[in-house]
Image (cartoon, rainbow, N blue to C red; front, top):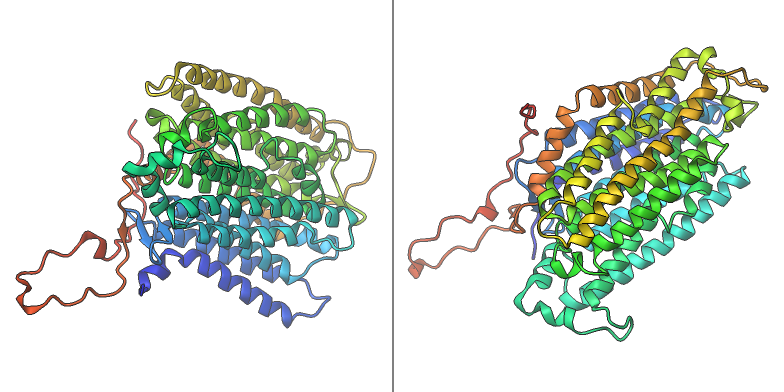
Length: 562
């Protein structure tokens, strides 16, 4: 029987705080009158999310640990991604108040769903077992389905939620099917057990025998591919991206930023844990059907389709939806570099910086878009945004900053993030342990992705040009709101801070890479006391390292060496 201690609760403390805060928000909603504004619930949600982000930073362990009987991994990756998603949740909650009031859909369950979605993402990225991964994934996904279809009186919102639900259900089914293959072979759902079984001396028999279901493909490869495709659907990466434009257009505008930014970085973080752990074998990573090849072609399709289609869009939210497909391609490009030993640490550090920059800037951009409105309708077309930058200088400047970051231009965080990502991908093509053909293809993809990102940046610059162009032909309302100002100010500050002083986030990335790429042997939290040794058994052995208490220390404060 597996025992549990306070250390097990400590590892999931941020997720527990988010869940408890969501339950508290639901209880507070019960005692509110229908006509009473819910601004205080937005502040409660934001404070709880920021508290969870702070706790994630403070409890980040110096060495990775396994908790809950090995089903949860307590390390820097889970803590850092939880902090990023919680900050995005706080920005979204504060920026949603005015928007919900304007559309007369201001209810407390909206904020509870945001907290539950963030808690699900936290559990997903900390999973060390496919059962926990599925629970966290579905907890976040179900909350996001409800948020997407939150405007019940809008046919567009209902359609968006239904499409998102159908594709999300398909992704969940593929995930379970892939796990069934892996569990049937190895007899376990744990990452460590599956990885050990696939690296065992007798594991060659699993890869030598083709399956009867998929000819010429061994079962471990089929299971890995199904899990990978499930995450590609969740991340809206090509060719599984067709739900994203409709879902992003129909969902409440502030929610779209949270779905696009936080959801994408949580998904890619879970993939990095899988491909640096149980799937880090030559048979699964290399070859024609290996995950590096799948990631390469998915990244290529996402970058090309996302950037080129975004240039043709006249509606801002659909443009941002298509550009999010391109951003998924950039993250998959870093995943390709993870398969190269010399560039693995750099790819993880680049993804951490890119995820932080993208999630904050995207949340801030959609909050600004949601702050503008007219006659209980949303501002979406380029013509409707014309001249708003001159009429409302602060909001126009903030939106321009977020779009500049998404385009990868200085001084915003997106510039350093894209520079780190593309340089890492290009350097991975010089690895000595990969085939020359794949190395050349990876370098060409890095160069082509950089060129296409410049082309895609024109879509963002076109929005900025309309912001400061001639006045719109329709009247657009904007009334300052304290919560919206706080949300936009927080997002703008973080975007500038990470762009001008990225050293702190890079240090976090180094810690994540160091722990994620360590040997599979990970210390476990103490559970049940060891049985007493018999009297005639002689002197007892020294206590195992696995039974030591978890040492909880904050991430190092030292800056990177110049």
